[in-house]
Length: 199
Image (cartoon, rainbow, N blue to C red; front, side, top):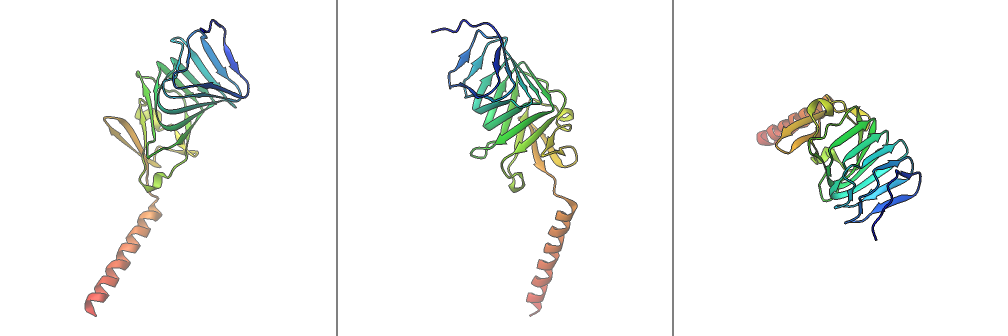
């Protein structure tokens, strides 16, 4: 049965769920003011849909590709479970919260179709970047990324942005004290080795 509803969809609480092949093809706009919208891989909104996630609202997306024409995170949260390709004409990030829950080592946000984020975003990464895991952001320029933060700490100067054919990899830069600890450990190991050889 087709959906003939043509007005704006407001989510004020609870959960609006889209399954793997879920589509909302008639409603033009969705505004999430509270509660959350959950959309699985393959989910697709109307070709002209504008999804606005305001403060207190949450958009939860699973691994795979979802299609949203225009996504505006106006203080709201985008939660990414695994690797997500967000196929969108325009993405606006206005003091948005991005929550990454990596699955099987995959931690990727791929904003396709040349979308241009604006303003700032704060990332919560529920994994351990310090163990060599990498967070890959595709479709965002280096200048924009340097305005983003991870856990409130600005990426510029605290995290290494490495450009490659896929986008930008984000990895932590060890504190100077960490380098000093590495150096001290290496010197101690060398001293013990020399002492052992003399003996």
